[in-house]
View 1 (cartoon, rainbow, N blue to C red):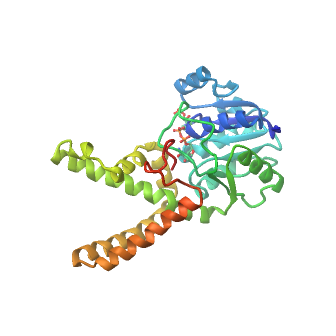
View 2 (tube, rainbow, N blue to C red):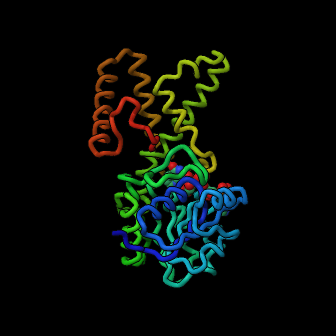
View 3 (cartoon, helix red, strand yellow):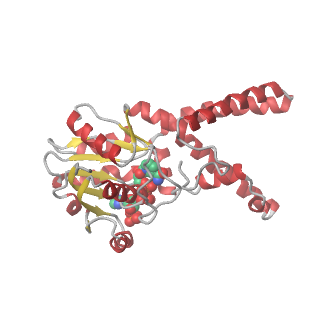
Length: 307
Ligand code: NAP
């Protein structure tokens, strides 16, 4: 039997993550009334048409009024502005969280605006697809994926455990991490790989102009996977790189060094170096499958393309 964990939840931003949270919370029966707001009238109209939220408001301030939990589901670069907009309407005792892919910059942007008596528990679900917008969400998105909570100094333990219970109820495994560590881990596992995919697809696109349509026509699985990742939302990813600058640059520096070493091995015919390197990376893939974070199905297990 499900238990309502929050009587009123406000989703600010009604895209991929917010819509997945909405369907998942409704399915699990953990939220009473769910209100929502998005910037454009077009998105708000779509949300109303598909029944995304019990009530969609035309301003963020109205949407958060009386909410026990407010979830900021907007691009990282606008979190601060929204926090400022909603601050006067927040109910004392309410919890504010977010789902942003970067944590320290988001904490710095939100925290100064929150009034005394409002709990702040930043979060980041490690789940998503390359799709965006209110119609791209689905209730199963968070199943068996991790959601990292990043409590700030003074975060109320009861507020943290209540939010933890919500993420667990919608299928996620919950981990607690500090912001700097989060940003470094995500730079390795998500941010740098996205930049590499964007680059590879950009290079192929340049080449396509030379070879006509061959890049698309003979696109093999490796490149196809890059194109899927490189189809991710440009606003979201611009904001991720601008706001996780140091960690991403640190990882890209290391990446470049390794790339040079592999380049040299190819040039000098050092097959042992290449073989040993690829053997090591293959073991990492096996580890990911064993941890249940992907399957080894021939299509890379991406019926519902997770990343
Ligand atoms: P999305 O599908 O593009 O949705 C973003 C939503 O934010 C849209 O409803 C948009 O409204 C709204 N928005 C943008 N600027 C706004 C503003 N100034 N005021 C109010 N609303 C605004 O994005 P998403 O994939 O759900 O990502 C949302 C957050 O989740 C981001 O911080 C991202 O880093 C994080 N995240 C994403 C993923 C992923 O893989 N997608 C995974 C984990 C975390 P309009 O439609 O009206 O423009």
